[in-house]
Amino acid sequence: MGYGLIALSWLISMIGLLTCDLRGVPWWGLAAAILVRTHLQTGLFILGHDAMHGLLCPRQPGLNHRLGALLLILYAALPYQRALRLHQQHHQAPGSPLDPDGPPTQGSSPLRWYCRFMAAYLSPGQMSGLLAFWASLIMLCGLITPTALLNVLAFCTLPLMLSSVQLFIFGTFLPHRCQQAPNAKPHPESLHLPIWLSLLACFHFGYHREHHDNPGLSWFELPAAHQRARTLAFVPPAM
Image 1 (tube, rainbow, N blue to C red):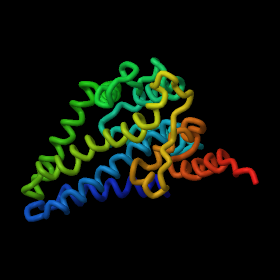
Image 2: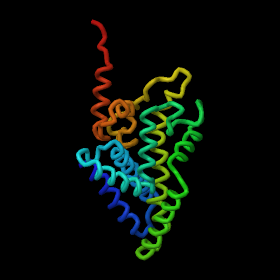
Image 3: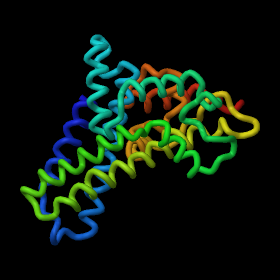
Image 4: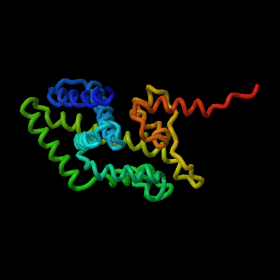
């Protein structure tokens, strides 16, 4: 249910927003729509991420990976097999020099880390496909609305860029920065956010230690795992 709702919301919002005339739309309405599209764009990647762990269709691995490939193509024209290989490497050696999601060097600035993170997944072919897709959308939407270029930039291009930053901050930088310190921790950290804020931040991707400890949990199962971990870690004061 959670998977289908995210995908359907992403599709309906894209069709609706790409075909509307933005002339006369107030800035706050445009900003709100961009934020919604950004959140749903991130959700689309989370679905693709769960597919990489075999969670979309656990009993049908072939269908699971085909759906994952489609989701990552829709997200940013990402080649599924390459993303799967890199993500497996990340889980095998998180925080180590072999981690493709890790920083270029110990103590690298967040900006350098983000650039390396993006470079690992981007390629000329992927970028060409993405640009061709956006150009096709502009031509199609131009048959319906005079603001087609702005629509595509506001509801496709910008949400994807913001989504990449969102995923990096809450799914890579904040959870794994503890592993880059001189006295590095062996495990990533979880962000101790309320459930509603964790959902808005990155579909509970901030509960990152729970994800690494049990990659077989779907995104919507992470809050319960996080709560269990915090309950077990709590030691009542001596009476």
